[in-house]
Length: 445
Image (cartoon, rainbow, N blue to C red; front, side):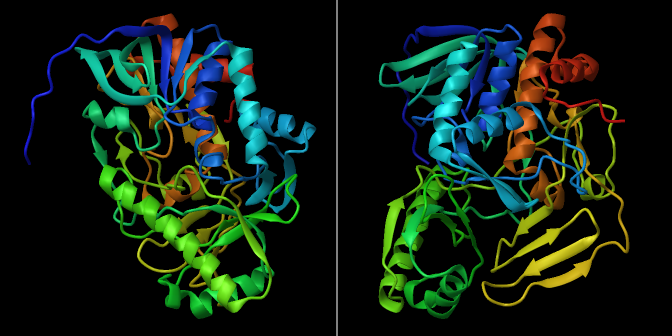
């Protein structure tokens, strides 16, 4: 590789805060809100023009159940529940038909509600601002370098949270990371008005997709509150590209839009129902790339047995959801002991059991799974989480990542109050702060 030498330059410090959050997904924003409500000065850096990440930019409008598998005990609260209540009051949320589609969101209205959190909490947000690099002093981060229309600048903070999705800040810090052997592929989502019913839609894609360069695949769709006749569609995957690589991500975005274009051409040729493309995503729906090592790696067995950790900071019930990385289809493992596999769009689902019986009502997320041991004032939180392949398939969804974001925000508060590096931080104060703020409904176990 050829290199050039970038001229040395002075970079102005453009902002100073107690906490800097890189990435404005719900995970990152909820970390920022929890810290701001506890009294920290918070700045949030977001490369797009809105907050919400995959929920808004990638159009994914499903949040999963907040209750145990029996539907009796609410196990997820905090800002996830607060956001759902806010959306329901303005007609931006519908309750869904099943635990895995418990809530359908109008993600345009979600953008507005997330902006309200910023105004109410006094968080400073820099939109259209790209994180570039960290500045460190020993085992502490002192600044992050960012760039926007005003040029290059530095943000000084006492604590930093990486909520970039792929762990860009963690990667630049040299944090140890790994990739799973089977990486769950991304999906290009879109909003479509009209078209045939769902069964016919899938039949058409299965029968004619190959003519338009579409792989045999599996997908889903969802209604959108407040948008009658418009559906969120997630019909395809982009296989074989590493979305943590700049060039590969660009190719993946192009391929995702090509697939949507191909579906529109297919419908025009083989169906008589009028269709209108309403919107394309601002970002590909990325499920997985890097995973960063922390004190504890969550396992499939932890979730399926409902292991309760002494440092539990979140709970969940979403099934273990594994999109096949090299072929069509998806496999689900449910906490009740059953399995479900879809091989393609139209074949009947295959059902089985991973256990003869199971009494697991929810699983737990330990604080130790968020704690790295290299930089004293840093946490990475989001889909870069430390979990095996099957456990990741359950924990990667938004209602679970939201809780991890709230935990990271509370941890930043406790770390700054105690002066302790994150690896020496007692989980007790973090958990108590989460309970006081509603992020944990009680202390499990």
